[in-house]
Length: 122
Image 1 (cartoon, rainbow, N blue to C red):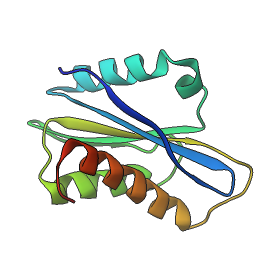
Image 2 (image 1 turned 30 degrees about the vertical axis):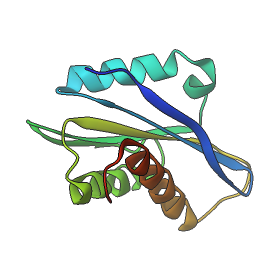
Image 3 (image 1 turned 90 degrees about the vertical axis):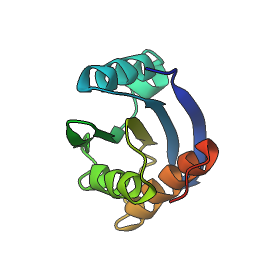
Image 4 (image 1 turned 60 degrees about the vertical axis):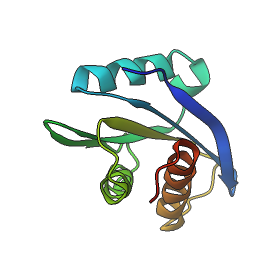
């Protein structure tokens, strides 16, 4: 497993803040270790949502962490980009206003920023 890459807060929308992180992983245990490392930072542990997805040799995994449908958004982008053996985590700190369908666009924006950062097309 490679080290965690954190881009920090990359965008805000109506008070909600979004950050994106990721790491190379090869198993569900690796995913859990990355999530544990991320949440060692209290601000991430207290975030409203830490949604994530990964495409592993054993298949695709995703978790919405209360942000219904967000894990699938990340997973589809990973599959489209051909990024295997990698977990991408989009963190949201809720800002007090519901975003409706825009929340999926923010998850896409965050995931795209991460893919761009590591040099993988989406």
